Image 1 (cartoon, rainbow, N blue to C red):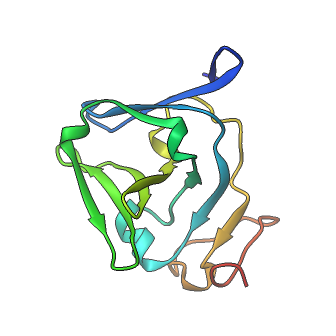
Image 2: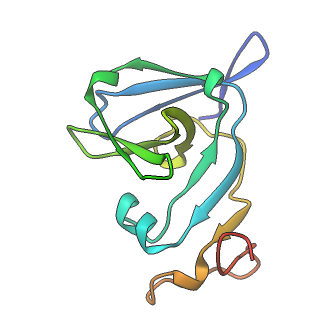
Length: 140
């Protein structure tokens, strides 16, 4: 399914695995990336994250926000999860929405992962596809 438009503005929706938490984005996602560090592998229960930034004013919870659990680091970055099913829904920075996990979107966001970061720390069993933009660390 492709994205919906409302008055010419991209509209995306997303939800957790159990469907009790849902949200909408009225705007464009940007800076899609995949992080292969050990922390992201644990947080996303996968070989890497798939994440894109969103302007906080373009994001709103439609339902189930009371079911969110937040894990935040000392640097102010964190993740929000569904306390029922455990889905990682979004990233936060200093209490505001910073980005969303691409796997929880219901529509095609019309973007591609632009870079793979921390591939120097990727799992030994993961094989990177040829031709993707890769950085050993954050962007070096």
